[in-house]
Image (cartoon, rainbow, N blue to C red):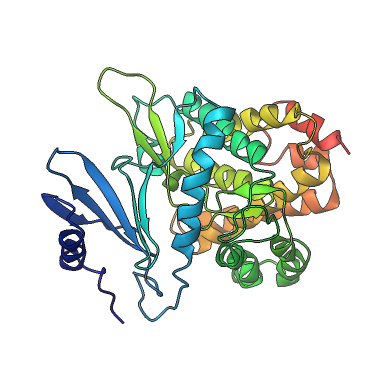
Length: 363
C-alpha cells in the first residue's frame, strides 16, 4: 500500500499546492506508526509534519485507523491552555500546534528538537533530578486539570466519548502477557487473570485525560547553550484517551526504572514518583482522590510493563530479561495481594519516600 504523503516528494507537492514556502524536507526515522517530516522554512525555522496513513508506516500490511491523528489534533488544541493555567511556569509543555488538514490526516506542529529523554539520559550536563521533578509535576497537572475535558470529535461536553484506537492499543501488553510469562518460566494463568481483572478496565476507565504513551522516548529535551535547565516537549499524542492516571504514571515509571537500571542509575524513577505523589496527595475538592486502589492499579501496570516489554525490546540478555520478568511478577503479586510491606521493598518503591505509604493507607 502507498499514500500520497508517504514520501518527501509527496509532501513537497502538497506544500507547493498550499503555497507553503520551504527550503528543505527531511523524512525522520525511528517511528513506526506515521510518516514524520522536518520542514525548514525560508526563515530558517523548522516545523514538523505528521501524516497518518490507514496503516503502519513501518509495516504497510498492518491496518491502523488514521483517525488517531484526529485525536492528537484535538488534544493539542485544547490541553495546552488548560496546562498553562495549572502550571504556568513549567519547563514542560505539549508540542506546539500549528495546523491540521483532517482530510489528509496531516498535522503540522512545532519542532521540539532532535533528542528525547531516553537517548539524552546519560548526558552529564542534564540534571536528571530536576527533569524528573518537572515531569512529575507536569503530568500530575495534566491529570488534575482534565477530569472534565472531553475528547469527543463532535461534542465538547461528552465525557463518555473516547479514543477507542488508544484504548485498544493500550491493552496489547495485557493480552500478550500470558505468553511472555510462559516464555520466562512463570505461570501464564497469572497473566490471564491480570488481563481479565485489570486489562479489561482500560475500556471503562474515565478519570481524566491521559497522554496514552507517556514515556521518556516521547519527551524531547532541548538544553540551550549556557542554560542549566532543559526545555521538555511532550510529543506523540495520538493515543490520548480518557482513562486512569495510574497508567500514564506507571508507564513513565517503568521506563524510568529501566533507564536507571541500565543507563547509569541517575535516580529518575524515585524523583518522578515522589513528585507526582506529592502533587496528588493534597487535591482540591472536585478532583479524583488517589489512594489504595489507585496505587494497586499503578503497581500492576508497572509490573506488566517491566515484565512484558523487555521481552520485545532489547534492554539486556536473556538472563537479564528473566530477572526483569521476575521483578515485574513480584510487584504484581504484592500489589494484587495488598501486601504493602512487601511492595514497599520491591524495585518500584524501595527508593521512594513515605508519601506512597500515605497514599496506600488512604482508603
